[in-house]
Image 1 (cartoon, rainbow, N blue to C red):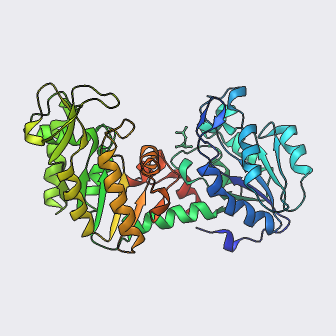
Image 2: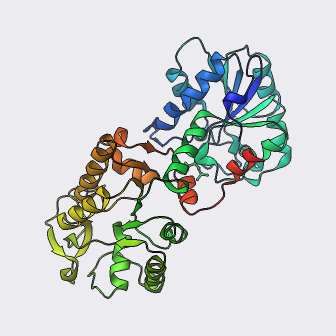
Length: 396
Ligand code: 3PG
C-alpha cells in the first residue's frame, strides 16, 4: 500500500479516516491515547500544506443523530494536542451543505473534523451513495484507523472506490508492528492469551497454535482448559460446553509443535470482591467452594522462564481478574518481566485488545512494550488471521 511518503499533499484536500472513538465516562474522555497517536499524521499533513478533513465514527448511534454521540467534544480535545499553527475546527455534518461549506472555507494546513459518520445508517451498510458524498469533499483518502479496519463501512472501505487511497503513519506503524510479531517474527515466538471465554477466542487460538512456539493461556479461559484435562476447578468460571473444543486445540497444538502453557497454581477465593481472603493452591487442589481468580507465584515463575526463551511475544488478555485487587498480582508480575526484557532489547513485545491495554497501564508498563496497538476488535481479528476489509481496500 501507499503511504504519506508517496503523497504530494500541498494544496490537496485530504479525507483522513481516523478512529476518534475514545472511551468517555460522564461526558469526559477517560483515555486520549487514540487521539495522541493520531497527531503525527495530522501534523505531517498539515505542515505539508494539505487541507485535512477528518472523518470518524464515534460510539454506536445506529444511524440516528444522537447528540451525546457528537464528535464535537472529541474534536476540541484533539485540537488541544496539535502544536504549531494548524487550526482545528468542527462541522456539524459529515456530508451535505454544512460539510461542503466548512471544507470550502479551509486554507492549506487547516484541520477540519466532521460529525460522526454513524449518524448516517449508510455508514455501517457501506452504502456507496454515502461513500461517494464523503469522497466528493476531497482529492485524496488517507486511512489512519487501523482499529476500525475490521469494519467494511462507507468511511473505511466504500470511499476507496472513489478516491486514491493511502495509509497514514499510525496505520503504517500498526501494520509494521503486527507483521514483525506474527508474519515475520524473530523466533522463538510466543503468545499470551487471557480473558474469560474460549468461545470468543476460538479462531484466535486456532490461528496462534500454527504460528507460535509457546502459547500461554491465562484468565478464566485457562480454567476451561484445565477442566478439559480432568482437573476439578471448583466454582471457577469456565465453559463446560467447550471441553471438547479445548481438547481439540491442545491436540492441534501438539501436532503443530506449539507448547501450550497452563497455570500450575492459582489464587482462589470463595467470592469475587476486593480484598477478600485468598489462598494460593496448586491447580490440583482447588477447593470445591472456591474459584480461581489469578495465577499463582509458581505459574508466574514458570511463565517468566518461558518468556525468557522467546525473542518475540504477542499479548492479548489479562492472566487474572486484574480489575479487582489482589487478583492483579499475576498479570502485574508478568507484565513487569515482559517490560524489563523488552527494555533490555532481549524481547520484542506487541500487545493489543481493550482489556490488555488497561491491564498493562494498570501495571505501569504501557510505555515499556515494543508496541501497543490502539485497536480492540481489529487486533483480535488480525490475530485470528482474518483479512481486514479496511486494509484490503488500501492494497487494491
Ligand atoms: C473500536 O473501538 O474497537 C473501534 O473504534 C470500532 O468500534 P466498533 O466496535 O463500534 O465498530
